[in-house]
Image (cartoon, rainbow over all chains, first blue to last red; front, side, top):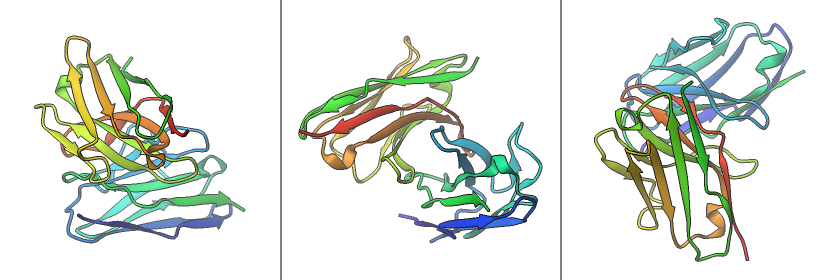
Length: 107
Length: 117
C-alpha cells in the first residue's frame, strides 16, 4: 500500500507568515491528493482536491501544488482562524490513506 | 441541505458488535462513494471502509473480515457492521461522501465508539 508522509508534524508561526506543509507519497498518485483542515473539536473540512483545486468558500490564501509523489499546501498569510490540524489524503484507489497530520499553531 | 448524519455509536465490550448508520439527505447516496473514516482521541484520521456508487466495497486491512459495509438505497442510508471489536477500534467514526477523482466533500458529525470492559 502507498504510504503518505507529512512534514512537519507541527509548526508555530506568526500572523501574516507564509506557511508550507509538505506531503510525500511512497508511489506516484498523479494528482489524486486532497487536503483537509480540522479545527479543535470539529469535523474535517475539504480544502483542496486534485492537488490544487480550491473548494468553494475556501479563502484564496490557501493553495496546493504538486503531482506524482510530492505535494505542498501553502497558506500565504497565516490568520488566527487557520489554527488547526491539516491532513493530506491520497484518493486514487483504496486504501484512501491519510497523512499523519500537521498541527499549525499561532505564535 | 446536503448532509450526512451518522449514529449508532456507544460503549461495547471487547469481542462485541455494533452497527453504525449513516443517513444521507439532500442527495442520493447511491450516486456517490460513501466512506467511513475514524479518529481515535487525540490522533489522526484513518480510512476504514467505503462503498462505491456501483456497490463495490473496500476495507482497510485492520478491519477486513470483521467489518461489513452495506447500504439501503430506499432509506438512503449506509451501514457499518462491526464485529469482534477490540480497544484499537475505539474512535470517533465519521461517514463521508466523495465522487470518483474528487475529495471527501461532506462529512457526518461523527459517532463515538468505545470498546472497553
